[in-house]
Length: 443
Image (cartoon, rainbow, N blue to C red; front, side, top):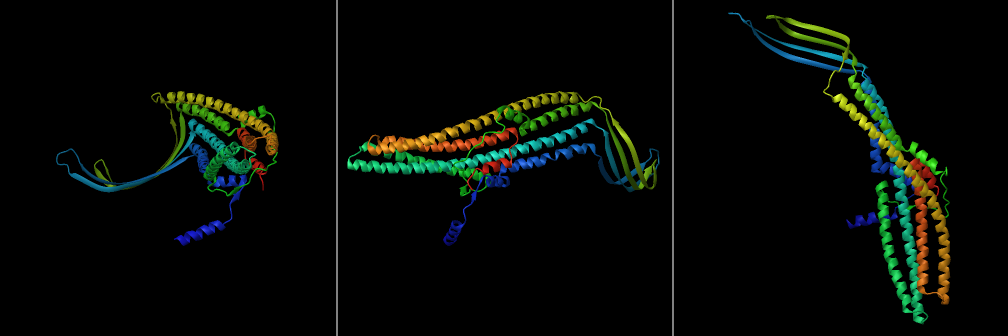
């Protein structure tokens, strides 16, 4: 057993590492993600609403058959009348065709079926956009966790070097023990931060695994000198208008409002007459008969009928009027839900637009802050060497530099996610946007 485990471990160790970029991770998620699979199944189910609604306009054909054993004893109510007995079998079948000629509720149900398909399409489009956002969020979370771990390790290494320098200076008498204690405290803190960063990275990797079913050994990182672009068009109002009209959630709710309108007409059709074309074809036969007390021979009969059937509802206990009032109230609910969905879409577009523009401003500010932090660290190191700066000044400058690097990385990822959310708010997020983001990653 141990030998088999050793062979398996060596085989896994020799296997090539699985690396991926954002586009590959997205395509893996399409095949694996359970939420998207559920949405796809719901969409496929929604497509069946159209043939179900159309069925009410098409003919209905049914067949029935029966066979009966008859055992009859017959005696007249007269004195001395003989007891007559007959036994025979009767059977038959009938085919019935019913074609609606006028059933207004069926027409409205057919229109509702077409609208239900539109709702399913919009909901599936929203699910695809949600998948892109969830994949991108999980992907950039892993990248940020990797950056945080790398920076924590680099900071720990720099503090360790500063700790060794403080110890040497104390030994030769050019520094106090306080410098050593300060450096040691920062080194211990950096060790704790490194452990926290390792744990956070593993959590983020497992979150990505939930979406794609595996954990890549390496992810394509964002290029260091990447240039982020402003939204096009660079006008918040136009994005809000696009969101109010093009959001899949808005489109689904608009279709839901139309369905509610058709439901009112459907319920009011309960007051209208219905007219159907009915045709039958049948056969009945019997091996014997009993008519007027006389036992007779068997019979064989074929029948065909064609006609129209009119049904006029008069009173149904108030159910039709109650359902009418219910449908009117539900239409008002659907209208209010549509207003709320439009407002939410507009708010989402505004928030995403501001996230992009403010994020780009933050990226520029952090880029400048990174240059300044590096200069401050170099100056403090030089000042410490010549004796005009103390150890804590260098440690503070180091911490500021690595914090700025981490904040810059987070600002870049947040800005890219805000760009995707802005497209999603307008209902235009697709795989081409994933490819555009993917082009910003290192090959």
